[in-house]
Amino acid sequence: MRKLLSFVVVAALGASLVACGDNGFGAGGIKVTSDFGQKPTITHREGDPEKQLVTEVLKEGDGPEVKKGELLTANYLGQIWRDGKVFDNSYDRGAPSSFPIGVGSVIGGWDEGLVGKKIGSRVLLSVPSDKGYKADGKEEAGIKGDDTLIFVVDLVSAAGNDTPLNAEAVTPSTPTKIKVSGPLNAAPTVTVAAGTKPPAKPGKPVVFALGKGKPIEKGDQLVGRFVIYDYTGKKQVSTWDAQPATAQSPAQPAAPTDQLPAVGPVAGKAGPLDGFAGIPIGSRVLVELPTQKDQAGKAVSAFAVIDVLNAFPAPKQTGQ
Image 1 (cartoon, rainbow, N blue to C red):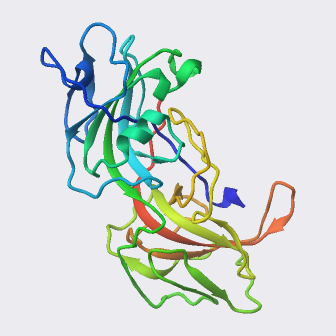
Image 2: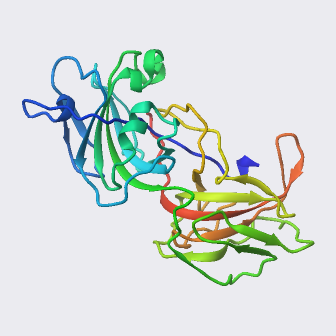
């Protein structure tokens, strides 16, 4: 059932203690050039890095503070202190990454250092190995077990399952036998008319709450909450329920995560979210899905109610 809506949770690490700089360098002996949203260049003083976690807010945003358990969307660059190697960055991909924060889905330095920071901030992190990849390191990224890692993180947005949609409830313009109701800061409630059957192909998205954000563009990657039901109205999968932590390099899954939205698939391609282009961010949308076969070959039928929290260009493929 989960393959109907893919999970993409990507990204990084964190921090919390500010150290004094010298010789023109800032906290932890680190200097960063470029502004929020631009790919940074990082240099540091000679010698060994600080042994403790170091954090510096290079530019403070004016948005809300990031809360534990939210899905944080951010741009970031990670660099190894030892040799100056940039082992990962989202700027070259042309799109931010999204990941649960404060719940063990990324390395400890990120969980400690990014919770409580304001959206719109650029944050510098110097992460010692005990709050990074620990003694195992990350061989494929060139990270050794004793490496200190430097990150610059631009906090783009964050949302949880209690984040209200910036939307107004509307009467659907497309006929449907499925009724969607409920407050816009909680899981939706659905009622399915008796005898409702799945469509032969993915149905046109039906808007039950019209968002006030910018229209989704073809090719966008969506950040959203969702619930998947079968055609009896029984819940199958929900981002409001506890989810196993999932992540990709340089994140480090460590614990289950609760009450998290997820990053959805790409609009504008053949699939369940084809047709989302033009719908405003902030909308609550019903998508009726055709019968498909699961991995065991069993036929499954489902529909989804999706809260679109944000949308970004799909990341470009890079050699990183």
